[in-house]
Image 1 (cartoon, rainbow, N blue to C red):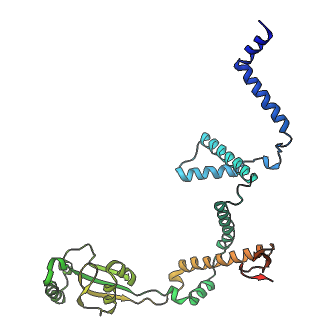
Image 2: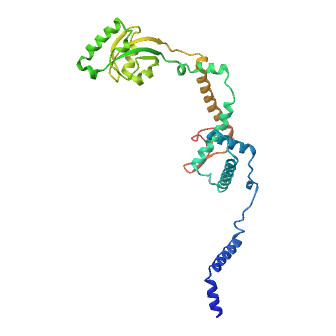
Image 3: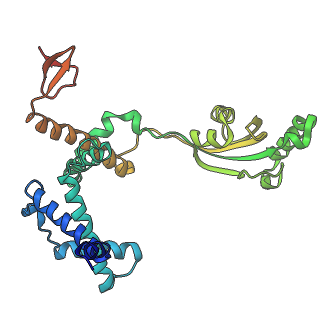
Length: 301
């Protein structure tokens, strides 16, 4: 067999093809390795502390209402390491830059930092009182109505609706001890207790609310109109709202005060950071220095 035939037979063998391609790739890597050298620096070290592992276990227990077993903890640690590796690689590749979703999330996190500082401080009594006095209209409590009603269904009585309502009204004024047995059936309650005007309007309509607020208390009147039909009503009590005390709305005042302090803390925190930057804005082909802690429209000429 000639040398040429032997060589032809050898190059047709799969093993030879594999070794040839592998050798080519190795040579190519060796040639370009200097241009693509992987440098292991401090960022290549990942440490998973016991505190982090305990936190993973606590989150698992909160979600599944049981403690994780050893295998589940190992899986969570592996997942944590995977996420950390991919996160660091993404940062190294600068994938976070120009991504609006990442930008918004980072802004939220840095806002949370200032919010946490505010939440640590408990509002003082004089601060709550001052807030209540500064915004009296915000906290003024609305009147509350307690009333009874008897429903008259116009669909059932047709043209005789007004006559039937007058007959029922006369019965109620004579003796209303059994008022729940009078009138027509409906899904509405026979009695409303401590209902604010907006609640009445939401359930029965604006016209009913207006007639209710104009009615005298202590006697049966009507019929007045709602979105369902007609009603005979008696106002049992009107609880005048007025200005509450701090103790009556303490939780609301604390929440509002912390919200205002959060906004203030954000502004102060941003102002301190903004002073560290020089900002330039291009307008009409000209660059201008932006005034510190100002809106973008204010530039220093």
